[in-house]
Each structure stands twice: as structure tokens, then as C-alpha cells.
Length: 403
Image 1 (tube, rainbow, N blue to C red):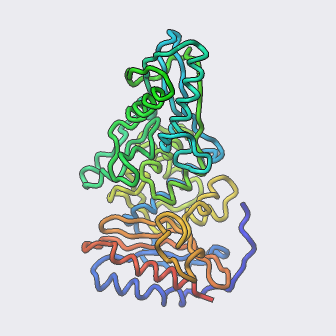
Image 2: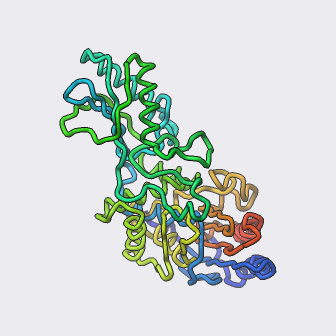
Image 3: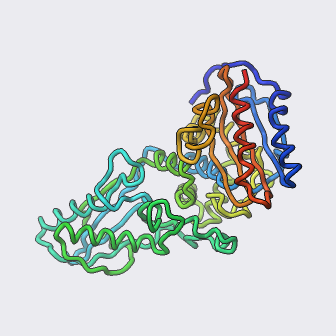
């Protein structure tokens, strides 16, 4: 992508700093840290530097780094297949997937990202293929693992946030949630998918007994397959809904594509090397995960805004990062924030929320059309950061209102 010609009136650093003053004052009064940077997208001029070179816990704005890494190493048009294969004994059926964590239990939904590939559709097609072969009864085995290392980070449990993320792996329905909207995930998401698929096969007229987790043998015959939404759409969904599990899943994909180990360490080191290769500063960067769920993660505002700058000026698929961010007042975690003029539809940002952290990283378009890149946050808010995010929203609203 090539950035549009410079448009809108230049914004002065003095105006930006005047808007920042209430954010800084609230932090001083509340005994917490406010950090941030604002950069003119067209000129690269730094309009605000508030502790911008110091790494802070930034919560889910970490996902902008995850998306940049994934989009750098992966083809956003590629889909993930979930398939049924029949063993040579004509009795053992294998459920396999390339890593689709957004499977649906019902029929495939062509317009939905979560549920694009439906297990009932796969079961119906599989049952028809089995009937053609005269097979009426099967034992169902399924792929249980896809990556190396742990599928869930122990640090999250130590920080008592483990229930906010599921397990990376070969397949899941709704990222492994036990019910829609839940902060509760199946410990064995592939096993749960196998159970749902077995029930769907039964309803399609096949007698099924559950077997065990395991990879399909090389000679197994493909019977039917369903495809996920393209990777780029799943990444947009991840950013819109701040889906922790999907963020770490896509970092594993990126690590594998980069030739790194498909572990948490391999995924986070791939982020760092990807940023460095793109010329993005990484001073103080420390990541335990790609979702930002761990409060041990540390990122500077300069790194966050560096991702935005590299995306804005970039030519490859990594340039999609900034365009995939949610819109204020319209999408995902921003749908109920900044939902009036001038910010609604003019702020595009990833949110971040932990007990002591609130953050935003994205872009703001002023009244005259000037594009600003903005990464801001409050950290170490011991009384609870949720109550302070209004200061950040007001700052972005102020930027959007500049002429």
C-alpha cells in the first residue's frame, strides 16, 4: 500500500500536549503512570513523547505486534482446512485440522468469521462419502496437537488470569470457550471438537464410537473438508474481539513460517526479530505471550507506534495491520467507546485492559483529515485502571476534534 498524499492541516505539538495535560494530571493525582506518543503519519514528526521510550505493561495492545508478525510471515488470503479422512481399515475415521480455532458446531456460515467452517456441514459431507463406500460404523480419532511446547502459559495462572485464554492447538469451536462469551475454556479443545463432530455424524446417520487423539496415517483417504475464513479475516476478528487464544495461535503460525520453534518462546522471539527487521525499535521489549494477557509483558510506546508507522508506510502484507484495527463507536471492543462525533469512525485502535492497565494504539483522523498515529496508556493503576480509561478516550476525542 502507498500512503495517501499528505492531507489535512498540520497539528502542533503544543495542541497535542495541551490535550495530554489532563491525562498526566490525573495520573499524578492517582499515583499511577501515564505514557504515550503521538506521531504525524505523513511527516513522522513526534507531537507527544510521554515516557515513550520506557517499556510498560500495555495489555492487549500487544496484539498489534502479534498481527504485524503474523501478517509479515503469512498469506492473509490462505484458509485453514478441517478434514475427515478414512483409514485403510475402512473403520477408523480421522478428524484433522490445520489450526482453525473458530470452527462452528452447526452448518458452515458463509458470512461469519467464527463458524465459517461448520462441523455439521463436515459431518453431512462425510456421512455421504461413507455411505458411498458402504461404511455405516466408524471409530473416530482426532488430531490432538499441532505445536511444540505448552499450549497454555503457567504465568497466567500465577497471575490469576488463566481463565481469560484457551489453548493453542489444532482446532477449537469459538476458540475453545465452554459457551459463547465465556471466560472459561475447555482444557482439551480438540477432544471437545471430536465429541461435537461425533454427535453431528450420528445425526447424519453414522454410528460413531470415540477413539483417541492422534495424527491420521499417511495413507488415509480424504472424504470431506470445510475451510475457515481467510487468515486476514481471522486476524481482523482477533483484533476486534481482542481474542487472546487466537493471538497466540497466529504467533505460532508465524513462528513456524519463520522457521522458529512453535513454542511461546519461539513465537515471542519471532515477534522481536520481525520488528527488528522492519526497523521498529524494541528497547525494553519483553514478551511472555503474544496476547498481552501476562502482566510481565513490557512494551514501549515507541515500539507500539513503530508498528503503526511500519504498517502505514509498508508495502507487504504487514501493511494490513493498521487497517484491521477496530473503529471507535462501531466495532468490537471499541463499539461502546468514543461513539459520538468527532471520534466515532475517525479513531481506529486496539484496546488494552488489565486490572492495573488501560491502553490504546492506533490512528486518529482530525477534522481536517490529518492522520495521527497514537499509542497511549495508564500503567500501575493500583485502584483499578478501568476507571481511568475515560481520560484516554477524551484525549483521542480531543485529537479527532483538532482542525
